[in-house]
Length: 304
Image (tube, rainbow, N blue to C red; front, side):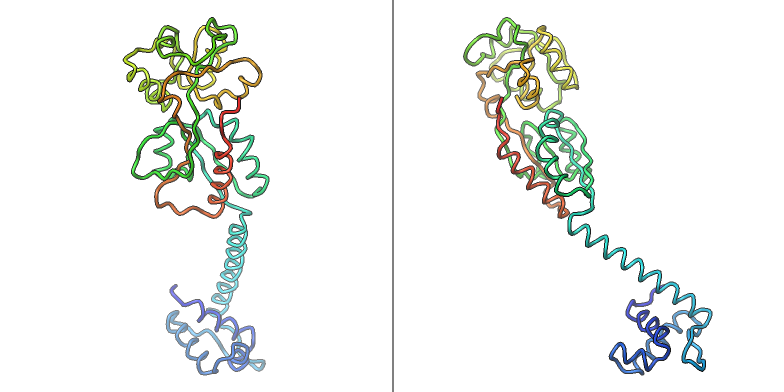
């Protein structure tokens, strides 16, 4: 049924007022204008809408159906208006993030906690993934926002903020080289058994690039797609692993792992990034979350 909304308003007000003249007075228009609009509705439906009674006009059977439709539509309009108002006040909504696994601890403890305390009606869907999976999720609009480590050029990515997060060597405090001073050379690292991310992960790509540029080959004794496995392998004392310090902040704070810098320019310049898709229109809640993330990223420096 394609009847203009205002035409339906004229019909409903006429029924509620009891006459065309009273409806015209309420709407501040000429009675002939209302009569004209009612005839157009009747022509569209192929049935009369009103009949006269001693008390004024009353709806026909078709008029009753149309009146019920108008009232239901009015309720839906009110509900939509209330929902839209709540959405614009950031009381409702849903946002999706895809992030590197290493971000999760600090992300939930700091920016997501402050955001959810301020906007309790907004639901957050948080997923983890590799660098490629994060980029795909953002580019394919499966995620509003991505957090990734180690930059990868892509024409559809917008970088909102970046933070330098060097790649460091993590190991047990009891590891033979744990008590050394100064940055570890890649040559020294090439002699140690390493637990690393699987090939294709952003951190693994960074590691491979650093060793390749130094014309060295790393000694990979274990590879995995699990951050937990990497940290447990390092805690065991059997392996070293290479991660940004924030990925093991709790273990470093508790003294279960220690971090040593690595003498590699590529490792020192590695960064974490907040990304969105170029051209994607963010909901208001998304813009507020980006502001929370930007403030967090600005202060998100290696602090362990």
